[in-house]
Length: 465
Image 1: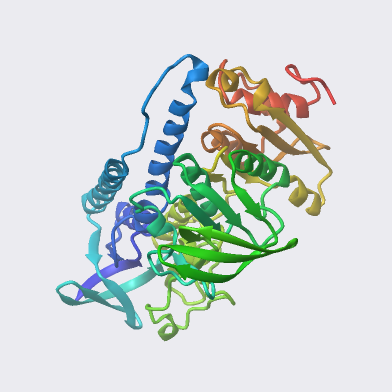
Image 2 (image 1 turned 90 degrees about the horizontal axis):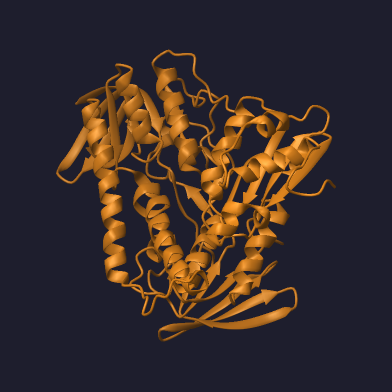
């Protein structure tokens, strides 16, 4: 019997961080992982996808280099070497996670965990079965990809994001069912690798829930490169014919037939709890199966916590990590809670999209007298010199006192820019605070300053509206 102050089931961005923090606080922590440390994000999502996206962006730059005066001939992608490099990146991070856990004296147990009764876990490992006795339990099992009737994954013609990241070449014709964050990242990436892209989205816009002005920039870029985008549409029939498929899509304008080589389904995710036997503890879940917790990450059962994607949207690795810290600190008796004001989000499509806080529509719904201000990257020196001028920074503020309510960015390095305004929102900053902060020139963050200057009523590099 392995004894633990806290047993953490799931070694992803929430679970392993929880294990590290718990061990730092002197708790005897056991992290149980069924597959690979780092979880879905490190092994099959965030890290491998961004590795491949980096290559696709570099290829795109090289192919467009002649307009900068750089002549390159014969640029191509060696998918075998690219996949090898991607795997090396993943392995290095997984090794680092294992080193940190062991360095802090947290126990790592590789196997499938199931609740065996109050205060007990049964873990099936490669060598047999282990029993873990715990005082506290943290559920960090994450989510798995959802499929659709008629579009069940077969690992060949109809694939999910995991299989999409393992492809040995770019499909000639790729259909992506689901125009959310994951779907659009794949669309932008494989479009650069040479695939003819078709996106089918059941909602009225891509990236449902995002600012429509932001989404229009992304859709315009996709379609400008030849992609077909069907909104308010759904796949109604798939006829497999050898190595390709004939797909019938129901659109507002009627039925459309599309012949493709691969169909990548990205229509959301489901909580991964079915193998844990949580019913034995009486843990409450919502109508979609997500575990319900309070701000301290505690479920309705004392001593049982849940963190990360298994708690529900937004399904973000950085949110999971922060929740893992909160859970560990609460178990250790510290006055911790998930009291952050906003969680930033980043989508690595082309151009990138990042947001934090309220959109203009959400701020209006919340009763604020909203002021919106934008600054186009096309007017920014650094964006021009980098040859990346699509998009803008949009600042949403309260007209009465200038309080920054939210920021949406679509454009170059949006994922790297958003943290500045996440901090601003957490600190209760106003547009005046950002406008008065000196930003180095020429840099992309100047776009945030410029948009804030406009919101403060004194734009410099654009006309007052």
